[in-house]
Length: 236
Image (cartoon, one colour):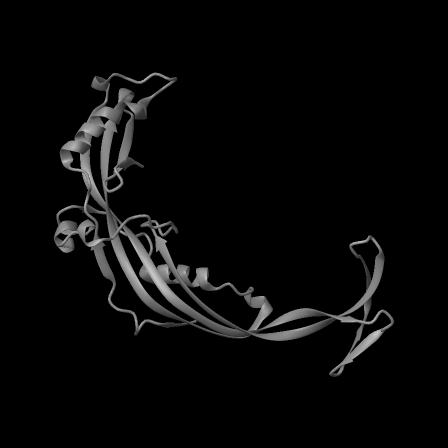
């Protein structure tokens, strides 16, 4: 696999703005905190659940786009229809026997036909372009956020420096391999020979999404984590 990274520009970094402030999230956590300790349809009193900490965490998503090209030879069997009284077909240096099969027409009549299976090789050309999104675990997911100018922090480095940030559990090379796998739609390598393939990375963007995490301590010192998407304003 030839991966052309020369045409890839430097990875872009975007930090999205929260759509909820600290006071709003504190009120929401206070309202929802007992839900996490429900047992047998009973929730504890609010006084029994303590908010140990409330942290704004930025979780990264990696968006990769690329163009994949490949050409290869693959084995294939093509059925050639012949007259019903043909016994065999001579093709190149081979002799291929005809096989009989029966079909029915729309009136229910039985029709006897002949065909010859020819084992051939096809020269296949593939051109694919694709974009994928990976979360910080390296799992593929849909990207559902807006990235308009009003939704983006003006000083991303400063924001990331002053807040908790989760790191990727997958390297950029590992992410590129996932992009390649999603683009390789041809057969397994056992069915292919003389494979030539290349990948041009168009763009890699890291987008940081603000997530509030509240560490809750309830009855019997049970610990739960409340996670809240600060952009979509919903519990995760």
